[in-house]
Length: 280
Image (cartoon, rainbow, N blue to C red; front, top):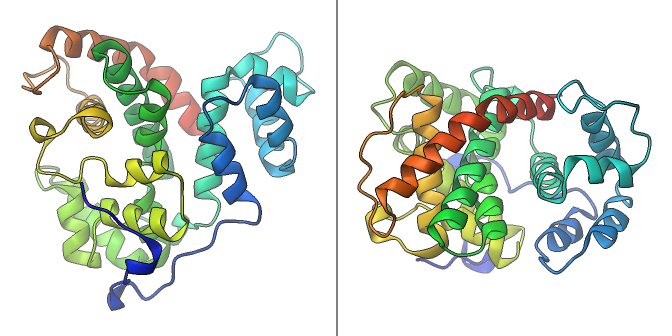
């Protein structure tokens, strides 16, 4: 696994844009979200310092997707209803997406982006849990952030990213990473690695940017293996595959993969609904 630091990263000239800064205070919030020791009350207290995030969580808790029996009017109740893992995921998603305007790229499908990110996060956490690989919380976080570089590319190079996305949609036999490298000068994984370094994110998040950058899951162990496998399963699910093909992942029993596949299919509708909410 390679290392990438802010003082050693050089942006390709063809990017034509600097790395956007995180909104004020968001770097602290990311540090908070990475602290696995933080309990429910402390997390709620930290989130309360960011009114836009509070508003989105209240909106989500009161949405048809959440279907509360009565209106949710406090952040504590909202977080209790949504659950700690989901709150962490939603706040993380809102935080890393804040600096970007991917709508500048008409071909960028925001709903599809979040559906893919959420499915990868769910798949990675299930692999971690059921295959006993690494920490479940870290795997979910890494899975959620794996594609964040695509937001930056859509914002900074909308025409080129749009061309890559259009080509990918017409022929998914060609990998999106390679298509983005051809059109933009870098893929979304490389872009995510640069973002992680410039933002000086904690190791959990930087691990997400590096995950799956290697040759394939057969050469990976630990967190990168969980994220890479979760990403592959998510891609198959988004392709509406019925039965799970033989993946041949070294270190993970195929029966475990089949079980994870079934759970992802079961959770798909709920994940799609959450993606719709994040688009709002």
